[in-house]
Length: 414
Ligand code: B12
Image (cartoon, rainbow, N blue to C red):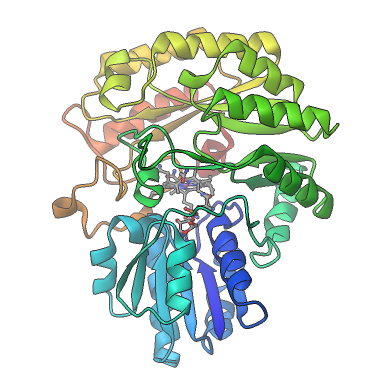
């Protein structure tokens, strides 16, 4: 059977880890029986993708909301040439709005949730239009297939752009938070201590992968795809202690939830070569942090940034503008917080009501063109307090205030 997996185009790139996991899993289940190819819209033009896919039995697309339209157009072109091709859509957008996706004639099947077992069912003959994924229990049994997804291309590109060879790893599935603005729960499910606990990878399995990948691709730095890396103190300490024990000195960074951070955690991370922490602060207003269910206090943010500074770790702070009840006063509190914590790098995102988040309203937004959204902005969102234009003005004021410390996306987009 010939299978093609495609990650449609988006202007910014990381390796397609979801496709790498699914590819590794089905190859393991059907050893030597599948011919799997992979294309990525960032690197491969439409003609290459369409020509390479048209003789496949199954063409599978991995889509966030902004990437869905490109995926759909590719599926239409492929089906025009070969109507026998079965198209399967998975990832965040199809998981959030599966019924809308299957309405599109070029979409044969949609996978909701984690793709490993669901895609295996499809390859084994399942033909339902919506297939629900199980919670993948094999994180310590397989490794994402980085050859398949041509990981070398994003690593080489990274070297060209910032002179560092970097790639990312997944250490956990399920985030213990359910922030109003984030769609993570759409794929891995809402955290529940009993029915849907956090699934952490064994630090030995994880470090074996990181060491092997770093040797193979000559990495000089690594990071994690996990939105919340420090899901437990135990995990952080055992990962760091194992890394130190191995004498594995490669520097790295992680996205932390400030609530779970303590000084000892940061100190151990620093000792294990962590050179940068990325923290979603979102707002300097406690009222806003509460309404978005961030599970965080402004005081804790201050504390974590102070510890990071004392320990010599680069601290990146990311802020979100445009929560429904956010006023000018709240934005002033955000500014005051930034003045106090002085992040080494700062980013300001305009809230986007992506499918899968609390802010998505199907009646109003079903036909939005999500490909118009980017990392930091979108043309749709407005609140009772600010029009879309005013939100962008607020964002511009903030970015102009910190020209030396801006996250690189601002520099690329502006
Ligand atoms: C790392 C990350 C990034 C990286 C790279 C993402 C990438 N690989 O291209 C960067 C920084 C570049 C990025 C960019 C963006 N991201 Co992002 N990102 C993440 C993050 C933190 C992890 C994604 C990841 O790699 N997971 C690990 C892999 C293994 O899981 P996975 O890709 O989800 O794959 C599994 C399933 O989705 C499914 N699956 C995936 N593809 C397929 C395909 C088939 C055929 C099947 C059957 C199943 C299947 O099976 C996989 C294995 O179980 C998530 C939040 C989170 N923690 O999940 C947000 C998240 C995915 N990002 C999001 C968004 C919106 C974006 C951006 C638009 C920027 C922005 N924030 O506004 C861009 C779009 C990028 C794109 N390529 O389209 C949203 C998506 C919401 C939505 N409705 O689409 C998320 C959920 C965060 C949020 N704010 O809610 N992102």
